[in-house]
Length: 190
Image (cartoon, rainbow, N blue to C red; front, side, top):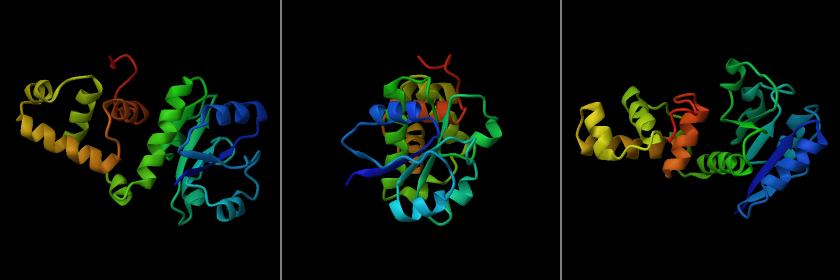
């Protein structure tokens, strides 16, 4: 079943570019909204799975969710304080490559579609975060085990927990997750 995406952005040019970027068989792009006025009604009527919203229009993610099972991504192209962006499930910067933008949307789609979606909201433990950072750096389980002074079995267990909690299975996806959650910076990634 296609995941429905609603874009809320005042710039028609940016909306058109994002729609073209998100042209993917797993996504159905709904009629875009150009303002946040009456957005609650649109969310109730259209029932999107993913909301991509300019955070300068509305950054109250709790209000946007309001009991709805929806992933909310911030669409940024100007400076927005990190404290505001932390409220969102993902941050999409229009300066990113088309593939990065599509991958970010597909990943948050997978999180909300996952049968373990309720588990995806659980925070990673300190050790799971450490393993995730090493995975994002491109290290193997054996290398991670040596670096963290634990067994390979322990690393494998942490990786299973990370996949269960995030809903992300690929190393590339986990790397993007680590970047979006400010666990690593772009210079750290191989």
